[in-house]
Structure formats: C-alpha cells, structure tokens
Image 1 (spheres, rainbow, N blue to C red):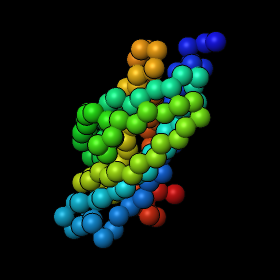
Image 2: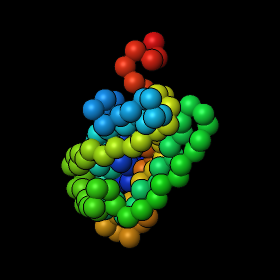
Image 3: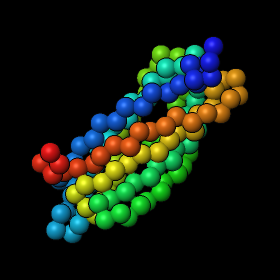
Image 4: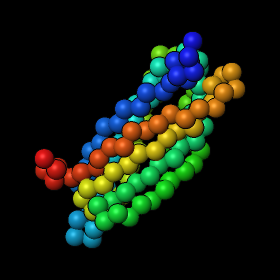
Length: 127
C-alpha cells in the first residue's frame, strides 16, 4: 500500500457566472463554484481547512484560508463524496482559482488535497 493510495482526495469543480448579482459597470463579477470531493484513498479522512488563491485578470491575488468549507468539516469514508457550493467576486470578467484542502486521516496522518487551478469566466469571454 502506497501513501498516495491511502490518502487521496479527488477534487472536481464546476463554475458558473451569476449575472443577477454582478454589476459589470462597477467591475463586479460574481461567480459560483460547486466542488465535489471524493475520498479515493483507503483511509477515512476529515477536511480541516481550506487554502485558496484567487487571481483576477489584472493580476490581483486574494489568498483565502479558513476552517472547513461552508461552515462544515466533512468526514469521508473511502468512496464517499462530499459536495458544496460557494462563490467569489472578481473585479474582472475572467480569473482563476486554485489551492488545497488540509485533511486529517483517521490514523492521525495529515495530508494535502490539491485543488487544481480552474478558470472563472463570464459566458462567451473565452473560446
């Protein structure tokens, strides 16, 4: 058994632009994102903290850290999924997000679950 197979959280993200909360004339672009985490490892684990790097098209970077996600610290058995939706506001119509979750396995091992960088974009901005 390798460490990677014991402690693996797969992260998938879907994004959408939220036009009714956005004000492009005021450089306010609201995006929602739905994250699905799957415990693809062999050990139950709890999500302890999150770390996001949010970058807009002007190169402005916002770093966000905190306990859990949407007020929860989900515990996932092998094969379990956990899904949540959150949002962010950018000053530009395009940006990126990425980061990691800090996890704690039931055997006491702390490990990181990377969040692959993804694009936030209003419709028809990127081809």
